[in-house]
Image 1 (cartoon, rainbow, N blue to C red):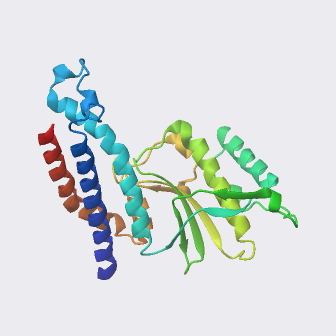
Image 2 (image 1 turned 135 degrees about the vertical axis):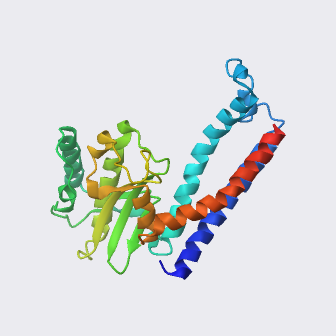
Image 3 (image 1 turned 135 degrees about the horizontal axis):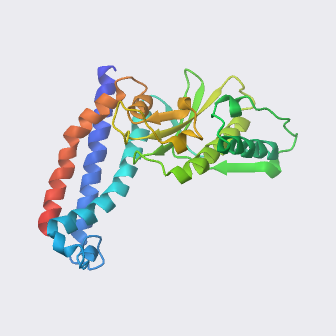
Length: 268
């Protein structure tokens, strides 16, 4: 990765982690005297009390921290992606009944344990009626990138926590397929442009470099549709060094979080 881009990635990570640490420190500082606050509301748990004050504090804090931190990782991914891609918003076009039926058919086949393939949806065509106004659709998406050089569109469903509830895999794939066909219909005048779907996680829950073994999720996603941990960060950076640069900067910037956490602990 060129030095200018590397420095920009590092600035983004450092800035967002600093903002995150400042924001949760302000929140918990305001809640010190609030009996309904996240930490105070846990202090009356008589079953947790015998385990000690530190246990009660950290168990209450980590739950709140985990959900908030996932949103920061999503934001960092999108901000870093802006260095390499055109990061776009919601998708709006039309969705035909034939396409909806085909999506349902694909999902049914996956439930019957047929191995997912990109060709399952990428090769599907149907007749487009002259008037599509009654089929108008829009879809909210937080991770839609466009690579102008390659003329490729990327739709990503990111699970920042590194995990995907097995029961939600079907729903997530169906949502991505809806995005795919709506976007495809908006590009009818540009048939040379490609669309790719991905499921991404911010880290590999089994450890970086190890096989990601969520088989229920793999039932609905082809291997080429997965961006797990390191692969996700390399993708948003559009560089094979992406994960290394993002994570090394995070290790430095995590000092903001540690220092804020120490100050919060003294308040309680």
